[in-house]
Image 1 (cartoon, one colour):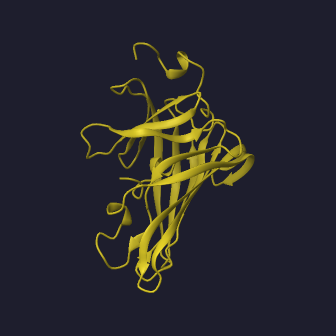
Image 2: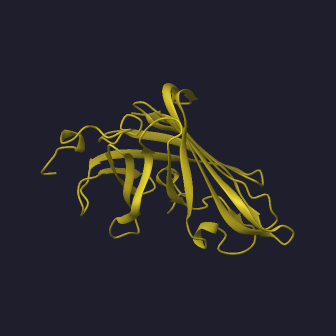
Image 3: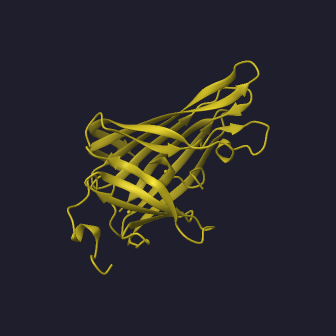
Length: 240
């Protein structure tokens, strides 16, 4: 899930009854591919390649902090070193996000509906939908430059493309991985020649057993005189 992962370009990608969610119920579907328990940490390199050939790198660190109850019940808490907190839950339907909080928010902001990271069944062909926005598309001249500040969210359709994959990364080689692909379309005024055009937003995510998200690629090409876009790649460097 892209909005729960990125440092600066993502919008801004789960106590008395149980010690942990797994103590009261079977482990949720997808828990091995997206660990929720306390004490995990992931360090990523986030590379953005803009259409003007500028390449930027920035680090991202994510960690799991264990259970952190919300008003409507227990949830698992993740936090990025950019100060964004994410609350997630899991059950027989999969792993899903329920709330977020930035350093500027006084309280968690609840999602209107479940935002699935992985949805059962975890087999090729499974699909689900979640809201997304343009994280890379920008205006060349007008302000605000970022499209996400002026355009409403659109639905992205996610699907499990393949399972049992081998993924090589700077953190090592991982087997038995699952690939998720998401596609959405955002209609924008490209330039006076072509006028309005459907801009394609594409996300690819690779999840590996016992590790979690190993690689993410977000593509938002513009190829217009009014807009610019690019490709963002997030690759795992270290994890524990």
